[in-house]
Image (cartoon, rainbow, N blue to C red; front, side):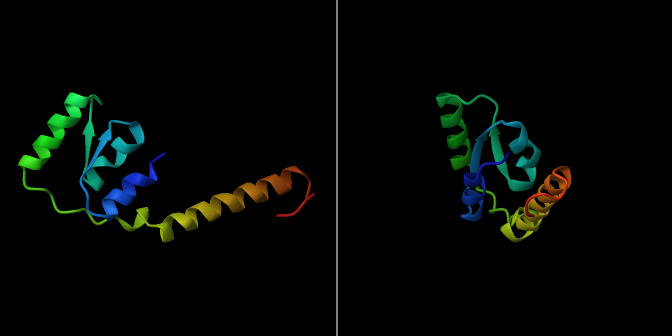
Length: 96
């Protein structure tokens, strides 16, 4: 899963440093997230200094697929599928 804070920071135009977690790694390039292979105080300090010494990249506009409007449709479809599957499994007992 992806942490909400990641998107909150990106929406604010902040450069994000993150632990190198599998789901974040999948989206890191598209979102302009810097991954830290080893999450240590020294590694974090070094990366912060490296970023501060370089011209910051422009904030990335989040692709539409990360918006709540887009994601809520996917989530509602998943809920509907779950409810329908449960309804069928119980032989139509209960409510949708």
